[in-house]
Structure formats: C-alpha cells, structure tokens
Length: 435
Image (cartoon, rainbow, N blue to C red):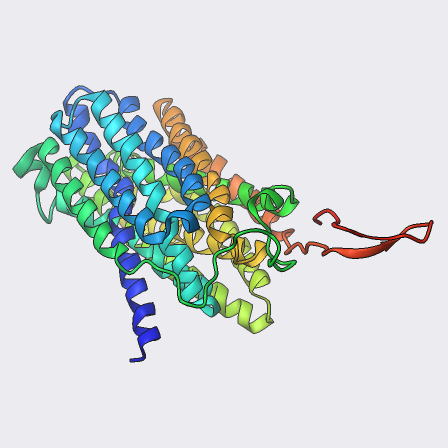
C-alpha cells in the first residue's frame, strides 16, 4: 500500500475512533431511568442532553474558525480531554447531583464534542475530495454507532450501571472517551498538498468565507432544512423508548415485554443511524457522478431523504404498538436521520467551496442547536399532555416543507474583480457583491 493511501486509511480509522466517543451524547437516555429513580423529574433528565447539544453546536463555531490556527490534532486532543473531564466531574459528585451533571456532561462534555466533531470531517474531505459524501458518512458513522456501544456497555453487555453505579460509570466512560479520542487524534492531519486559507487573495470565485456565506439565500435554506431534519430526528430519539413502551403496554404487552421491545427499537434506530450516514453519502456521490454535478446530487438526495422522513415520522405513532412494524419504521427514521450528518457537510462544501469548510460548516451546524432545543422540548411538552401523535405529525409535515426548501438551493458564484468602465472613461477595479 502506498504511503499516501495508508495515511488516508488511518485518517478514516482515527475518525471512527473519535466519533465513537463523541457519540456518547446520544447514549444519554440509558441514564435517565436511574436519575428518575434518584428523584429527578422528567424535565430535569432532559436538561443535560439539551444543554449538551446546544453547547456542542456553539463551541463548534470556535473550533471551525480556529481549525487552521491550532491544527486538527491539537483541537481533537483538547476535545477528548474536555469530554472526559466532564464525565469524570459528574461522576465524582455521585452522578445524581443535578448541577454537577449539568455542568460536567451538558457544558464541559458538550464543549468537548464541539471541539472535536468537525476535525475528522474536514480532514477526511481533504484526503478524499472525490468521495466527499461517502467519506463524510464514514467519518461520522462512529457517532451513531458509538451511541449503541455506550448504551449496551451501561446495560446488557457490560452491566456497568448495576455493577458500578451511575457515578463510577460516568468516571469510567470519561477515561475511555479521553483515551479513545486522543488515540484517534494521532492521525488527524491534512494531506501535504493542502494549503490552509489565510485570506481571500488566492481564493477562487467558488469559495465563500463564513461572512460571505451567511449573506446568501442558499445558506439560510440549508440551515432551515438541516434544523428541521435535526428537530424531527432528535425528537424521535427522545421518544423512541418512552412512546412505544406506552403504546405497547396499551396493546396488551406486559411492562417487561414493552420495555424490551422498545429497547430493541432503540438499538435498531442506532444501527440504522450509523448505516444511514454511510448509505446516504454513497447515494449522493453516485447521483452526483451520474448527472456530473456533485451539488445537484447532494440536493436531490436531501430532497428524497426529507420527503421520505416526513412520511415515516408521520406514520410512526400509528404503528408503534406492534413490534415488527415498530422496528421497520424505527430503522427507516434512523437511517434518514443519520443521512443528515453525511449530506449537510457535503452540500456545504459543494455549495460554498472547500477552502473555508471548517468554519462554514460550524455555522451550518447551528441548525443542530435549534433541533436539539426544539425537538426534545416539543416531544416532552406534547408527551406530557398525552398527545404524542401530534408531536410526530408536526415534525412529519415540517420535514415535507424542508424537502421543498432544499429543492431551490443551487451553488452561488461570486463575481470576481473586473474592470468597470465609467461614463467618464475611467477604468477602476471593483469587487461586486455576492450573488
């Protein structure tokens, strides 16, 4: 194997290791029953998850803007240490004290994820520029897969919660997160041919910096579409065990049977989530190659993904009381939700260029903060009113609207400096506004 190919392969391995630990935030639901037994309200159990998602998205802006200043390896290591420290901090205080858990897992842990998340995506795209969809999907597949691993270690595989208690489990996880992310960070470096952007003097008319990007209609359309996709998916994650459990019990299943079936649906969702990141990435690459336009291939893929997600989410509450239909639709929703994290990084670089991807995608990823706030809260609020069906129908219709929004997005092109002849015959160089 050539040296360059080996280095690219190790970047992929490192990306998977990093994202497996960063995906810990999706495993949060495995801890909520223990916290409720310790006296937490249902609303309190959602705060660390929501704060973690918002902190993750906000800190990612800092990481994206400083990716080239600090370098991918340093940012990754810092993220791993911060994530691990947050979980250890929560565990030291017993794991059931509200404020230490909120600070440790919600704020410190969320910040650690935000520092590390964009790195393997940005680095992987530079190593495999002709397979952006697939490589992004592979890079973030570990995020969804990691959630299943940490859930199972805490439960049926490792039985950590029963054997060690929630506080010690947090501390064990903190050490594992820090170690795994730092090992993956060893291979996080850009290829030799990549030149970090310093200013706009050597940037093509297809490369938009973050300020230029935010002035375009395309940015706001992509942001809105991603926000809706994240809202629907994160709401489903929050209700994936609770709602089917209630529906199954109402259909005659025992409490133990309903819990086991709903737990299996969560695992199916997590596996499909990981598969969707790779699958949708490959699909978008294939469509782009067939029509000779990566950006259009990505756009068509997102339209299909959002439209079908609208259908799957809308029918979910009507099939959640039967095991096999529940598994099938949970898998379909998870597959589409995972696709968001492959397709939106790729459409960001296809639409606004490669040079400023790290910074640009951090602003697109603000949509995740919106979804992380609206999705769980919408599901929790309507769920507490006993109207789960309405929560799914609202996000289902929103997903159909998102498919319409993203359909209009084409790649903008900046007008470069050109000569402009004035009426008085003088010639000056002017820089026109972005389209």
